[in-house]
Length: 317
Ligand SMILES: Cc1cc2nc3c(=O)[nH]c(=O)nc-3n(C[C@H](O)[C@H](O)[C@H](O)COP(=O)(O)OP(=O)(O)OC[C@H]3O[C@@H](n4cnc5c(N)ncnc54)[C@H](O)[C@@H]3O)c2cc1C
Image (tube, rainbow, N blue to C red; front, top):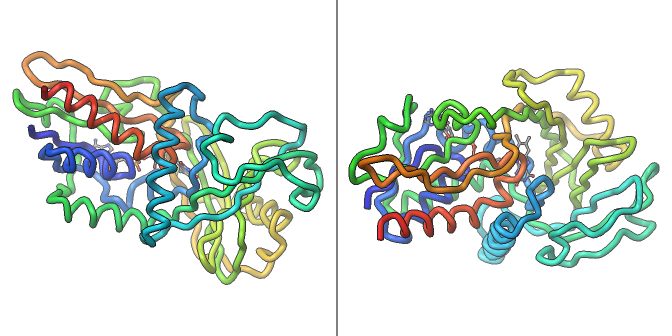
């Protein structure tokens, strides 16, 4: 069956690849190519399903994605490595829901903590340098016979047909395409620093340095972060850049000697929860929606792609 996919971010590429592997004729049509996407190409990124609902579906998507990314590290694929991540807590807290699938999970010892933080945990996680990994995902998709048509879609009804199932992976664009008022941009600014080698990820969501993270990629590191709901402006804010560097230096003093390589602003596809379901459309096979991953799209991607195939197969059968 013909199953065009709208969107070429991590969600569209993984969905389209899995659909092709399952025998669907899944071409991609996208306004932005993978390395120009507003979310996927800007992310830090690590496997860390922090904001995802701890329900059975999302937990399963997270577990599946962690397995695929861990295998990708084992296979030496571009842009993925395994590294320790420390998550610092200002107050003692329980283990997160993903303590079980996470590799090497343990509570912080005194040597892991920083001023203002009394607790936390360490896990080994997958760190993804998104641009080389998006290139890899796009090339693999093309090797599977896929093609990416670089153009905007005004309406999903322009793509759907009596024998075409549409797969909607349009990220924050789904607000318009799916007429979904629950979708909103969640703006995030990141700073990429060069000339520094750091050997662990630090993540902070609470306490005096919140919200801050440092994600190393070889001789560089991505510093974040910000989360501004409803904000579409992608112009970097210089004052924010300074604040991000200041906080990151407190976490990793080696960054004091690093140089700014790039400053980017991305738009997470915010929604109260991921929309991954089949919508019937009269006279057609309908639409499978896969969007609204907010700050968890990389962490849930492969599990969501498998679910897309299950929904598409049920519809086709
Ligand atoms: C700063 C930042 C840090 C992040 N860190 C992490 C992290 O550490 N771990 C993690 O798991 N996630 C992280 N995320 C979140 C993750 O990047 C997103 O959830 C994920 O990239 C969403 O992917 P997507 O493919 O749905 O959207 P996008 O990457 O935005 O791709 C959407 C695609 O749809 C296309 N599209 C949209 N509208 C149309 C239209 N009308 N016509 C045609 N094409 C259209 C676009 O052109 C694009 O190709 C982060 C995000 C940001 C911004």
